[in-house]
Length: 207
Image (cartoon, rainbow, N blue to C red; front, side, top):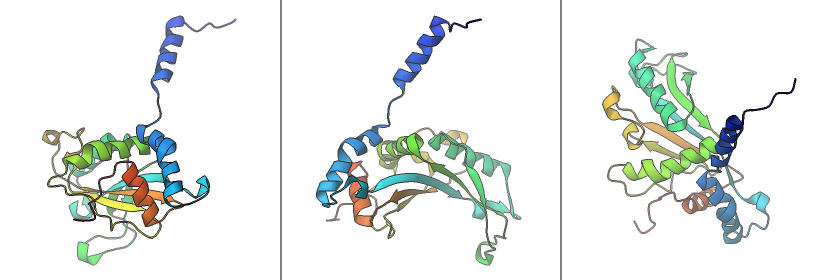
């Protein structure tokens, strides 16, 4: 017996497909930034252009431990924050070794983290640049000294309130987070150039 898909189902499927577009920053990178990097640094071959491979966001929770255990309300708030801003459920990291100064024992919860690639990564970066960073209090530009030798960039946000999707009236405590942009085939100079072309607001040199 031959099955015929209902017309309204097929139409709905086509409509959904039509609305799926490439992330804005990914299109900008592919259509303009790659060519600009090639010319600016005389790389000669597109294979030498740096690529953003993943973005990680983590929230340290060691200081919130009570007798080496994490209170449910702390756990739920952090998980909710990371899920809302990334579209992914975070994983919990455990301390690999004891740290006496912070009263953290090996095996105790130390952080929650999400790792984004592909469309999730590009959408997150767009919202970070366009929505979250402009909401930072007294913002004067991102530091240009936060690149490592491989061109990866790290930055911190002091509170989750910078994300529009977080309703601070519904959370029970304020927490920050670390954002890491991981590049392949890059250097600090190359990564900085790429991020600037994507709209990352670094502090001006004269400042």
